[in-house]
Image 1 (tube, rainbow over the protein chains, first blue to last red):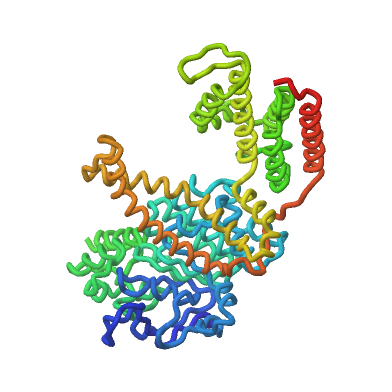
Image 2 (cartoon, chains in turn red, yellow; image 1 turned 135 degrees about the vertical axis):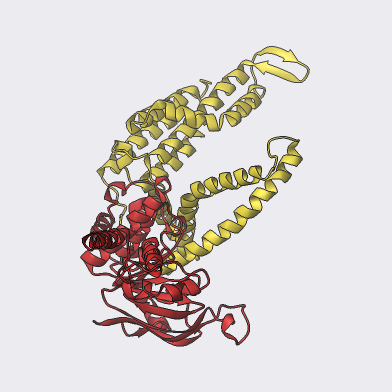
Length: 288
Length: 260
Protein backbone atom coordinates (compact mmCIF):
# COMPACT_ATOMS: atom_id res chain seq x y z
CA UNK A 1 0.00 0.00 0.00
CA UNK A 2 1.02 3.53 -0.77
CA UNK A 3 1.91 5.83 2.08
CA UNK A 4 -0.23 8.94 2.28
CA UNK A 5 0.54 10.67 5.56
CA UNK A 6 3.82 10.27 7.33
CA UNK A 7 4.27 11.57 10.87
CA UNK A 8 7.94 11.73 11.81
CA UNK A 9 8.97 12.20 15.42
CA UNK A 10 6.50 14.99 16.10
CA UNK A 11 6.59 17.00 19.31
CA UNK A 12 4.03 19.71 19.92
CA UNK A 13 3.79 22.24 22.70
CA UNK A 14 0.82 24.58 23.03
CA UNK A 15 1.65 28.25 23.31
CA UNK A 16 1.63 29.35 26.90
CA UNK A 17 2.69 26.01 28.38
CA UNK A 18 6.24 26.00 29.64
CA UNK A 19 8.85 23.50 30.62
CA UNK A 20 11.00 20.89 29.00
CA UNK A 21 9.61 17.74 30.58
CA UNK A 22 7.24 15.46 28.73
CA UNK A 23 4.10 16.68 30.49
CA UNK A 24 4.52 20.10 28.87
CA UNK A 25 4.11 18.58 25.43
CA UNK A 26 0.76 17.64 23.95
CA UNK A 27 2.54 15.35 21.51
CA UNK A 28 5.64 13.46 22.59
CA UNK A 29 7.52 12.12 19.59
CA UNK A 30 4.69 10.63 17.58
CA UNK A 31 5.58 8.40 14.66
CA UNK A 32 3.01 6.88 12.37
CA UNK A 33 2.09 6.36 8.75
CA UNK A 34 -1.35 6.34 7.20
CA UNK A 35 -1.77 4.53 3.91
CA UNK A 36 -3.90 5.54 0.97
CA UNK A 37 -7.48 4.26 1.17
CA UNK A 38 -7.10 3.09 4.74
CA UNK A 39 -9.70 3.53 7.50
CA UNK A 40 -7.77 4.31 10.66
CA UNK A 41 -9.26 4.95 14.07
CA UNK A 42 -7.27 6.87 16.64
CA UNK A 43 -8.48 6.30 20.19
CA UNK A 44 -7.37 7.55 23.57
CA UNK A 45 -8.88 9.38 26.49
CA UNK A 46 -9.08 13.13 27.00
CA UNK A 47 -5.69 14.81 26.89
CA UNK A 48 -4.02 11.92 25.10
CA UNK A 49 -3.17 14.25 22.22
CA UNK A 50 -5.45 12.67 19.64
CA UNK A 51 -7.33 15.88 18.76
CA UNK A 52 -4.07 17.84 18.70
CA UNK A 53 -2.68 15.32 16.27
CA UNK A 54 -5.82 15.56 14.10
CA UNK A 55 -5.23 19.27 13.64
CA UNK A 56 -1.69 18.57 12.47
CA UNK A 57 -2.82 16.55 9.46
CA UNK A 58 -4.00 19.61 7.51
CA UNK A 59 -1.55 22.09 9.04
CA UNK A 60 -3.94 23.92 11.33
CA UNK A 61 -1.21 23.27 13.91
CA UNK A 62 2.43 22.88 12.96
CA UNK A 63 4.78 20.54 14.85
CA UNK A 64 7.11 22.24 17.36
CA UNK A 65 9.77 19.77 16.23
CA UNK A 66 9.51 16.93 13.76
CA UNK A 67 7.74 16.81 10.40
CA UNK A 68 4.51 15.66 8.86
CA UNK A 69 4.32 14.81 5.18
CA UNK A 70 0.99 14.71 3.39
CA UNK A 71 1.41 12.98 0.05
CA UNK A 72 5.03 14.07 0.12
CA UNK A 73 4.33 17.71 1.04
CA UNK A 74 5.67 18.98 4.35
CA UNK A 75 2.83 20.60 6.32
CA UNK A 76 5.23 23.41 7.23
CA UNK A 77 5.42 24.44 3.57
CA UNK A 78 3.41 27.64 3.66
CA UNK A 79 3.21 28.02 -0.11
CA UNK A 80 1.44 24.70 -0.50
CA UNK A 81 -0.94 25.17 2.43
CA UNK A 82 -4.09 25.12 0.33
CA UNK A 83 -2.86 22.13 -1.60
CA UNK A 84 -2.63 20.23 1.68
CA UNK A 85 -6.05 21.40 2.85
CA UNK A 86 -7.56 20.36 -0.46
CA UNK A 87 -6.13 16.87 0.03
CA UNK A 88 -6.99 16.52 3.72
CA UNK A 89 -10.37 17.72 4.98
CA UNK A 90 -11.08 18.09 8.68
CA UNK A 91 -14.50 17.65 10.29
CA UNK A 92 -14.76 19.02 13.82
CA UNK A 93 -16.68 17.93 16.88
CA UNK A 94 -19.43 20.53 17.16
CA UNK A 95 -21.67 20.40 14.08
CA UNK A 96 -23.16 23.84 14.80
CA UNK A 97 -19.88 25.67 14.78
CA UNK A 98 -18.64 24.53 11.40
CA UNK A 99 -21.62 25.38 9.23
CA UNK A 100 -21.07 28.79 7.66
CA UNK A 101 -24.10 29.51 5.50
CA UNK A 102 -27.81 29.60 6.32
CA UNK A 103 -28.82 27.10 3.65
CA UNK A 104 -27.60 23.52 3.40
CA UNK A 105 -26.44 23.57 -0.22
CA UNK A 106 -24.78 26.97 0.15
CA UNK A 107 -22.78 25.65 3.05
CA UNK A 108 -21.69 22.56 1.15
CA UNK A 109 -20.60 24.85 -1.69
CA UNK A 110 -18.52 27.05 0.64
CA UNK A 111 -15.30 25.04 0.35
CA UNK A 112 -15.55 24.74 -3.44
CA UNK A 113 -16.20 28.45 -3.77
CA UNK A 114 -13.07 29.16 -1.78
CA UNK A 115 -10.84 27.09 -4.03
CA UNK A 116 -12.23 28.76 -7.15
CA UNK A 117 -14.14 25.95 -8.85
CA UNK A 118 -16.36 27.16 -11.74
CA UNK A 119 -20.05 27.58 -10.85
CA UNK A 120 -21.41 24.73 -12.95
CA UNK A 121 -18.87 22.29 -11.57
CA UNK A 122 -19.71 23.39 -7.99
CA UNK A 123 -23.39 22.61 -8.58
CA UNK A 124 -22.52 19.06 -9.72
CA UNK A 125 -20.11 18.50 -6.84
CA UNK A 126 -22.56 19.81 -4.25
CA UNK A 127 -25.36 17.58 -5.53
CA UNK A 128 -23.09 14.54 -5.54
CA UNK A 129 -21.74 15.29 -2.08
CA UNK A 130 -25.25 15.69 -0.67
CA UNK A 131 -26.30 12.42 -2.29
CA UNK A 132 -23.24 10.67 -0.87
CA UNK A 133 -24.24 11.61 2.69
CA UNK A 134 -27.92 11.02 1.93
CA UNK A 135 -28.98 14.61 2.59
CA UNK A 136 -29.99 15.61 -0.93
CA UNK A 137 -33.65 16.07 0.01
CA UNK A 138 -32.66 18.69 2.56
CA UNK A 139 -30.57 20.84 0.21
CA UNK A 140 -32.73 23.96 0.49
CA UNK A 141 -33.37 23.65 4.23
CA UNK A 142 -31.89 25.80 6.92
CA UNK A 143 -29.31 23.90 8.99
CA UNK A 144 -30.69 24.96 12.36
CA UNK A 145 -33.83 22.89 11.88
CA UNK A 146 -31.87 19.67 11.39
CA UNK A 147 -30.75 17.12 13.95
CA UNK A 148 -27.15 16.88 15.14
CA UNK A 149 -26.45 13.82 13.02
CA UNK A 150 -27.83 15.52 9.92
CA UNK A 151 -25.76 18.64 10.58
CA UNK A 152 -22.65 16.56 10.98
CA UNK A 153 -23.37 14.82 7.67
CA UNK A 154 -23.68 18.22 6.02
CA UNK A 155 -20.32 19.20 7.46
CA UNK A 156 -18.93 16.00 5.96
CA UNK A 157 -20.60 16.79 2.62
CA UNK A 158 -18.93 20.21 2.68
CA UNK A 159 -15.58 18.46 2.87
CA UNK A 160 -16.44 15.78 0.28
CA UNK A 161 -17.44 18.45 -2.23
CA UNK A 162 -13.83 19.61 -2.20
CA UNK A 163 -12.91 16.08 -3.34
CA UNK A 164 -10.23 15.41 -0.75
CA UNK A 165 -8.16 12.25 -0.71
CA UNK A 166 -8.43 11.99 3.02
CA UNK A 167 -10.96 13.06 5.63
CA UNK A 168 -9.95 13.50 9.26
CA UNK A 169 -12.87 13.45 11.68
CA UNK A 170 -12.16 14.82 15.13
CA UNK A 171 -14.68 13.14 17.45
CA UNK A 172 -17.52 13.73 15.00
CA UNK A 173 -19.99 11.79 17.12
CA UNK A 174 -19.15 13.12 20.58
CA UNK A 175 -22.09 15.52 20.65
CA UNK A 176 -24.65 13.29 18.94
CA UNK A 177 -27.36 10.95 20.14
CA UNK A 178 -27.04 7.22 19.37
CA UNK A 179 -29.07 7.51 16.17
CA UNK A 180 -27.02 10.44 14.89
CA UNK A 181 -23.87 8.53 15.76
CA UNK A 182 -25.00 5.55 13.67
CA UNK A 183 -25.85 7.80 10.73
CA UNK A 184 -22.44 9.47 10.77
CA UNK A 185 -20.47 6.24 11.20
CA UNK A 186 -22.48 4.60 8.43
CA UNK A 187 -21.71 7.57 6.15
CA UNK A 188 -18.01 7.39 6.96
CA UNK A 189 -17.69 3.68 6.24
CA UNK A 190 -19.60 4.12 2.97
CA UNK A 191 -17.24 6.88 1.86
CA UNK A 192 -14.25 4.73 2.64
CA UNK A 193 -15.63 1.70 0.82
CA UNK A 194 -17.32 3.29 -2.18
CA UNK A 195 -15.18 6.33 -2.90
CA UNK A 196 -11.87 5.04 -1.59
CA UNK A 197 -11.34 8.07 0.62
CA UNK A 198 -8.77 7.63 3.36
CA UNK A 199 -10.49 8.06 6.71
CA UNK A 200 -8.87 9.00 9.99
CA UNK A 201 -11.48 8.78 12.71
CA UNK A 202 -10.61 10.24 16.09
CA UNK A 203 -12.98 8.85 18.69
CA UNK A 204 -13.32 7.69 22.22
CA UNK A 205 -16.05 5.18 21.44
CA UNK A 206 -14.37 1.80 21.14
CA UNK A 207 -17.42 0.43 19.31
CA UNK A 208 -16.61 2.83 16.46
CA UNK A 209 -12.91 2.02 16.46
CA UNK A 210 -13.74 -1.63 15.88
CA UNK A 211 -15.04 -0.79 12.39
CA UNK A 212 -11.66 0.51 11.23
CA UNK A 213 -8.95 -1.36 9.33
CA UNK A 214 -6.41 -0.26 11.88
CA UNK A 215 -6.62 1.16 15.39
CA UNK A 216 -4.00 3.44 16.88
CA UNK A 217 -4.18 3.90 20.65
CA UNK A 218 -2.73 7.13 22.00
CA UNK A 219 -1.75 7.85 25.55
CA UNK A 220 -0.10 10.99 26.98
CA UNK A 221 0.97 12.32 23.61
CA UNK A 222 2.37 9.10 22.28
CA UNK A 223 1.33 5.98 20.39
CA UNK A 224 0.66 3.27 22.95
CA UNK A 225 -0.09 0.46 20.56
CA UNK A 226 -1.50 -0.04 17.08
CA UNK A 227 -2.71 -2.80 14.82
CA UNK A 228 -5.92 -4.35 13.52
CA UNK A 229 -8.87 -4.05 15.93
CA UNK A 230 -8.39 -7.74 16.82
CA UNK A 231 -4.73 -7.24 17.71
CA UNK A 232 -5.37 -4.10 19.71
CA UNK A 233 -8.38 -5.22 21.70
CA UNK A 234 -6.76 -8.54 22.53
CA UNK A 235 -4.52 -6.50 24.84
CA UNK A 236 -7.25 -5.90 27.38
CA UNK A 237 -4.73 -5.80 30.25
CA UNK A 238 -2.69 -3.00 28.70
CA UNK A 239 -5.73 -0.93 27.82
CA UNK A 240 -7.27 -1.34 31.26
CA UNK A 241 -4.00 -0.31 32.83
CA UNK A 242 -4.19 3.00 30.98
CA UNK A 243 -7.84 3.29 31.97
CA UNK A 244 -9.09 2.82 28.43
CA UNK A 245 -12.23 0.91 27.62
CA UNK A 246 -12.64 -2.03 25.32
CA UNK A 247 -15.96 -2.82 23.58
CA UNK A 248 -18.42 -4.45 25.98
CA UNK A 249 -18.57 -7.72 24.05
CA UNK A 250 -14.77 -7.96 24.12
CA UNK A 251 -14.71 -7.38 27.84
CA UNK A 252 -17.36 -10.01 28.52
CA UNK A 253 -15.50 -12.70 26.61
CA UNK A 254 -12.23 -11.61 28.20
CA UNK A 255 -13.66 -11.96 31.68
CA UNK A 256 -15.27 -15.32 30.91
CA UNK A 257 -11.99 -16.57 29.52
CA UNK A 258 -10.34 -15.34 32.70
CA UNK A 259 -12.66 -17.61 34.68
CA UNK A 260 -11.40 -20.63 32.78
CA UNK A 261 -13.94 -20.92 29.97
CA UNK A 262 -12.40 -21.89 26.68
CA UNK A 263 -13.34 -19.02 24.42
CA UNK A 264 -11.63 -17.26 21.48
CA UNK A 265 -9.00 -14.72 22.36
CA UNK A 266 -10.77 -11.65 21.09
CA UNK A 267 -14.22 -10.78 19.78
CA UNK A 268 -15.11 -7.30 18.56
CA UNK A 269 -18.89 -6.99 18.53
CA UNK A 270 -22.10 -8.51 19.84
CA UNK A 271 -22.46 -10.72 16.78
CA UNK A 272 -19.08 -12.39 17.25
CA UNK A 273 -19.69 -12.64 20.97
CA UNK A 274 -22.97 -14.49 20.47
CA UNK A 275 -21.37 -16.80 17.90
CA UNK A 276 -18.53 -17.60 20.27
CA UNK A 277 -20.91 -18.40 23.11
CA UNK A 278 -23.14 -20.58 20.92
CA UNK A 279 -20.12 -22.46 19.66
CA UNK A 280 -18.89 -22.98 23.21
CA UNK A 281 -22.27 -24.18 24.47
CA UNK A 282 -22.82 -26.63 21.62
CA UNK A 283 -19.30 -27.97 22.15
CA UNK A 284 -20.08 -28.52 25.83
CA UNK A 285 -23.30 -30.33 24.93
CA UNK A 286 -21.49 -32.64 22.55
CA UNK A 287 -18.95 -33.47 25.21
CA UNK A 288 -21.82 -34.15 27.58
CA UNK B 1 -39.95 31.39 2.54
CA UNK B 2 -39.20 29.40 -0.61
CA UNK B 3 -41.57 29.73 -3.54
CA UNK B 4 -41.75 30.08 -7.28
CA UNK B 5 -43.73 33.28 -7.74
CA UNK B 6 -42.87 36.18 -9.99
CA UNK B 7 -41.35 38.08 -7.10
CA UNK B 8 -39.33 35.06 -5.97
CA UNK B 9 -37.83 34.78 -9.43
CA UNK B 10 -36.62 38.37 -9.48
CA UNK B 11 -32.94 39.01 -9.02
CA UNK B 12 -32.18 39.94 -5.41
CA UNK B 13 -30.23 43.00 -6.55
CA UNK B 14 -33.19 44.25 -8.56
CA UNK B 15 -35.43 43.74 -5.56
CA UNK B 16 -33.16 45.71 -3.26
CA UNK B 17 -32.73 48.55 -5.74
CA UNK B 18 -36.45 48.78 -6.42
CA UNK B 19 -37.16 48.73 -2.69
CA UNK B 20 -34.83 51.69 -2.18
CA UNK B 21 -36.53 53.65 -4.96
CA UNK B 22 -39.89 52.63 -3.51
CA UNK B 23 -38.94 54.01 -0.09
CA UNK B 24 -37.88 57.28 -1.66
CA UNK B 25 -41.15 57.55 -3.54
CA UNK B 26 -43.25 56.69 -0.53
CA UNK B 27 -41.88 59.82 1.08
CA UNK B 28 -42.47 61.79 -2.07
CA UNK B 29 -46.19 61.17 -1.89
CA UNK B 30 -47.81 64.47 -1.03
CA UNK B 31 -51.47 63.62 -1.30
CA UNK B 32 -53.91 60.80 -0.83
CA UNK B 33 -54.20 60.06 -4.52
CA UNK B 34 -50.50 59.39 -5.00
CA UNK B 35 -50.57 57.41 -1.78
CA UNK B 36 -53.46 55.40 -3.20
CA UNK B 37 -51.33 54.62 -6.26
CA UNK B 38 -48.53 53.39 -3.99
CA UNK B 39 -50.97 51.34 -1.92
CA UNK B 40 -52.37 49.72 -5.04
CA UNK B 41 -48.82 48.90 -6.11
CA UNK B 42 -48.07 47.42 -2.69
CA UNK B 43 -51.17 45.25 -2.72
CA UNK B 44 -50.22 44.03 -6.19
CA UNK B 45 -46.69 43.12 -5.06
CA UNK B 46 -48.06 41.28 -2.04
CA UNK B 47 -50.55 39.40 -4.18
CA UNK B 48 -47.76 38.43 -6.60
CA UNK B 49 -45.65 36.87 -3.83
CA UNK B 50 -48.44 34.33 -3.21
CA UNK B 51 -47.75 34.47 0.52
CA UNK B 52 -50.79 34.78 2.73
CA UNK B 53 -51.81 38.31 3.69
CA UNK B 54 -51.93 37.30 7.35
CA UNK B 55 -48.14 36.89 7.29
CA UNK B 56 -47.84 40.52 6.24
CA UNK B 57 -50.21 41.67 8.94
CA UNK B 58 -48.05 39.79 11.44
CA UNK B 59 -45.00 41.70 10.21
CA UNK B 60 -46.90 44.90 11.07
CA UNK B 61 -47.40 43.68 14.60
CA UNK B 62 -43.66 44.06 15.23
CA UNK B 63 -43.77 47.81 14.58
CA UNK B 64 -47.26 48.37 15.95
CA UNK B 65 -45.99 50.61 18.75
CA UNK B 66 -44.07 52.77 16.29
CA UNK B 67 -47.12 53.06 14.02
CA UNK B 68 -49.36 54.11 16.91
CA UNK B 69 -46.86 56.58 18.36
CA UNK B 70 -46.06 58.34 15.08
CA UNK B 71 -49.77 58.33 14.28
CA UNK B 72 -50.66 60.07 17.55
CA UNK B 73 -47.83 62.57 17.21
CA UNK B 74 -49.06 63.53 13.74
CA UNK B 75 -52.63 63.75 14.96
CA UNK B 76 -51.84 66.93 16.86
CA UNK B 77 -49.61 68.56 14.28
CA UNK B 78 -52.03 69.73 11.73
CA UNK B 79 -53.64 72.87 10.50
CA UNK B 80 -57.23 73.35 9.42
CA UNK B 81 -60.52 73.49 11.22
CA UNK B 82 -60.24 72.94 14.98
CA UNK B 83 -62.58 70.18 16.11
CA UNK B 84 -61.61 69.84 19.72
CA UNK B 85 -59.27 71.72 22.01
CA UNK B 86 -57.88 71.13 25.46
CA UNK B 87 -55.06 73.13 27.00
CA UNK B 88 -52.23 73.03 24.39
CA UNK B 89 -53.65 70.13 22.45
CA UNK B 90 -55.69 70.83 19.35
CA UNK B 91 -57.43 68.29 17.20
CA UNK B 92 -57.83 69.51 13.64
CA UNK B 93 -59.12 68.09 10.37
CA UNK B 94 -55.62 68.41 8.99
CA UNK B 95 -54.34 66.42 11.95
CA UNK B 96 -56.77 63.60 11.34
CA UNK B 97 -55.85 63.35 7.69
CA UNK B 98 -52.15 63.44 8.70
CA UNK B 99 -52.85 60.61 11.09
CA UNK B 100 -54.21 58.31 8.40
CA UNK B 101 -51.58 59.39 5.91
CA UNK B 102 -48.71 58.45 8.19
CA UNK B 103 -50.22 55.17 9.30
CA UNK B 104 -50.80 54.02 5.73
CA UNK B 105 -47.36 55.20 4.71
CA UNK B 106 -45.55 53.24 7.41
CA UNK B 107 -47.73 50.16 6.99
CA UNK B 108 -47.20 49.77 3.26
CA UNK B 109 -43.51 50.51 3.68
CA UNK B 110 -43.21 47.70 6.19
CA UNK B 111 -45.23 45.32 4.03
CA UNK B 112 -43.13 45.85 0.93
CA UNK B 113 -39.94 45.41 2.95
CA UNK B 114 -41.38 42.17 4.30
CA UNK B 115 -42.16 41.12 0.75
CA UNK B 116 -38.44 41.41 0.03
CA UNK B 117 -37.31 39.40 3.04
CA UNK B 118 -40.04 36.79 2.61
CA UNK B 119 -39.17 36.08 -1.00
CA UNK B 120 -35.38 36.23 -0.84
CA UNK B 121 -33.09 33.78 0.95
CA UNK B 122 -30.63 35.38 3.39
CA UNK B 123 -27.69 34.18 1.31
CA UNK B 124 -29.14 35.71 -1.85
CA UNK B 125 -29.69 38.90 0.06
CA UNK B 126 -26.15 39.14 1.39
CA UNK B 127 -24.82 38.09 -1.98
CA UNK B 128 -26.81 40.86 -3.64
CA UNK B 129 -25.59 43.41 -1.11
CA UNK B 130 -22.04 42.30 -1.75
CA UNK B 131 -22.49 42.84 -5.50
CA UNK B 132 -24.24 46.16 -5.06
CA UNK B 133 -21.55 47.48 -2.73
CA UNK B 134 -18.75 46.25 -5.00
CA UNK B 135 -17.99 49.75 -6.34
CA UNK B 136 -17.15 50.77 -2.77
CA UNK B 137 -14.14 48.45 -2.77
CA UNK B 138 -12.56 51.13 -4.95
CA UNK B 139 -12.51 53.24 -1.78
CA UNK B 140 -10.91 50.33 0.14
CA UNK B 141 -14.15 49.29 1.81
CA UNK B 142 -13.89 45.56 2.63
CA UNK B 143 -17.11 44.60 0.86
CA UNK B 144 -16.52 40.85 0.97
CA UNK B 145 -15.80 40.96 4.71
CA UNK B 146 -19.01 42.88 5.36
CA UNK B 147 -21.03 40.34 3.38
CA UNK B 148 -19.32 37.44 5.14
CA UNK B 149 -20.08 38.97 8.51
CA UNK B 150 -23.73 39.34 7.54
CA UNK B 151 -23.92 35.73 6.38
CA UNK B 152 -22.38 34.45 9.60
CA UNK B 153 -24.49 36.73 11.78
CA UNK B 154 -27.68 35.51 10.09
CA UNK B 155 -26.55 31.92 10.42
CA UNK B 156 -25.79 32.23 14.13
CA UNK B 157 -28.82 34.22 15.30
CA UNK B 158 -30.97 31.10 15.83
CA UNK B 159 -28.02 29.20 17.34
CA UNK B 160 -27.35 31.94 19.88
CA UNK B 161 -31.04 32.35 20.67
CA UNK B 162 -31.27 28.67 21.47
CA UNK B 163 -28.15 28.93 23.57
CA UNK B 164 -29.52 31.92 25.51
CA UNK B 165 -32.60 29.89 26.26
CA UNK B 166 -30.52 26.98 27.51
CA UNK B 167 -28.36 29.20 29.73
CA UNK B 168 -31.42 30.92 31.16
CA UNK B 169 -32.95 27.58 32.03
CA UNK B 170 -29.69 26.43 33.56
CA UNK B 171 -29.51 29.57 35.70
CA UNK B 172 -33.16 29.21 36.68
CA UNK B 173 -32.45 25.64 37.73
CA UNK B 174 -29.78 27.08 40.03
CA UNK B 175 -32.36 29.38 41.56
CA UNK B 176 -31.84 32.54 39.52
CA UNK B 177 -34.85 34.84 39.52
CA UNK B 178 -35.34 36.66 36.24
CA UNK B 179 -39.02 37.40 36.17
CA UNK B 180 -39.59 39.56 39.19
CA UNK B 181 -38.29 42.81 40.62
CA UNK B 182 -37.94 46.23 39.07
CA UNK B 183 -36.13 46.99 35.85
CA UNK B 184 -32.70 47.34 37.49
CA UNK B 185 -32.99 44.03 39.28
CA UNK B 186 -34.02 42.33 36.08
CA UNK B 187 -31.13 43.81 34.10
CA UNK B 188 -28.79 42.70 36.85
CA UNK B 189 -30.29 39.20 36.72
CA UNK B 190 -29.29 39.03 33.04
CA UNK B 191 -25.58 39.29 33.80
CA UNK B 192 -25.21 35.58 34.68
CA UNK B 193 -26.82 34.83 31.32
CA UNK B 194 -24.75 37.21 29.25
CA UNK B 195 -21.34 36.21 30.56
CA UNK B 196 -21.59 32.51 29.64
CA UNK B 197 -23.17 33.54 26.36
CA UNK B 198 -20.19 35.75 25.56
CA UNK B 199 -17.68 33.09 26.51
CA UNK B 200 -19.39 30.48 24.39
CA UNK B 201 -19.71 32.82 21.42
CA UNK B 202 -15.96 33.33 21.48
CA UNK B 203 -15.46 29.59 21.59
CA UNK B 204 -17.86 29.19 18.68
CA UNK B 205 -16.07 31.92 16.75
CA UNK B 206 -12.79 30.13 17.29
CA UNK B 207 -14.24 26.83 16.08
CA UNK B 208 -15.88 28.45 13.09
CA UNK B 209 -12.66 30.19 12.09
CA UNK B 210 -10.89 26.84 12.21
CA UNK B 211 -13.63 25.14 10.19
CA UNK B 212 -13.42 27.91 7.59
CA UNK B 213 -9.65 27.57 7.40
CA UNK B 214 -10.05 23.82 6.92
CA UNK B 215 -12.15 24.60 3.90
CA UNK B 216 -9.49 26.81 2.36
CA UNK B 217 -11.09 30.16 3.15
CA UNK B 218 -8.64 32.91 2.40
CA UNK B 219 -10.65 36.09 2.65
CA UNK B 220 -12.45 36.06 -0.65
CA UNK B 221 -9.48 36.06 -3.04
CA UNK B 222 -10.17 34.16 -6.28
CA UNK B 223 -13.50 33.07 -4.89
CA UNK B 224 -16.18 31.70 -7.23
CA UNK B 225 -19.87 31.32 -6.45
CA UNK B 226 -22.21 28.41 -6.93
CA UNK B 227 -25.20 30.58 -7.66
CA UNK B 228 -24.52 33.44 -10.01
CA UNK B 229 -27.00 36.27 -9.84
CA UNK B 230 -28.20 37.39 -13.23
CA UNK B 231 -30.83 39.84 -14.32
CA UNK B 232 -33.59 38.35 -16.43
CA UNK B 233 -36.71 39.40 -18.30
CA UNK B 234 -38.60 39.17 -15.01
CA UNK B 235 -36.52 42.00 -13.62
CA UNK B 236 -37.08 44.08 -16.73
CA UNK B 237 -40.85 43.64 -16.44
CA UNK B 238 -40.69 44.57 -12.76
CA UNK B 239 -38.59 47.61 -13.59
CA UNK B 240 -40.97 48.85 -16.30
CA UNK B 241 -43.92 48.24 -14.06
CA UNK B 242 -42.39 50.10 -11.14
CA UNK B 243 -41.39 52.97 -13.41
CA UNK B 244 -45.02 53.35 -14.49
CA UNK B 245 -46.07 53.47 -10.83
CA UNK B 246 -43.47 56.02 -9.92
CA UNK B 247 -44.39 58.25 -12.84
CA UNK B 248 -48.01 57.88 -11.70
CA UNK B 249 -47.02 59.10 -8.24
CA UNK B 250 -45.22 62.12 -9.64
CA UNK B 251 -48.16 62.98 -11.90
CA UNK B 252 -50.62 62.66 -9.03
CA UNK B 253 -48.46 64.93 -6.94
CA UNK B 254 -48.39 67.52 -9.70
CA UNK B 255 -52.03 67.45 -10.74
CA UNK B 256 -53.69 67.21 -7.35
CA UNK B 257 -51.40 69.35 -5.20
CA UNK B 258 -54.12 70.29 -2.75
CA UNK B 259 -55.91 67.03 -2.35
CA UNK B 260 -54.84 66.30 1.22
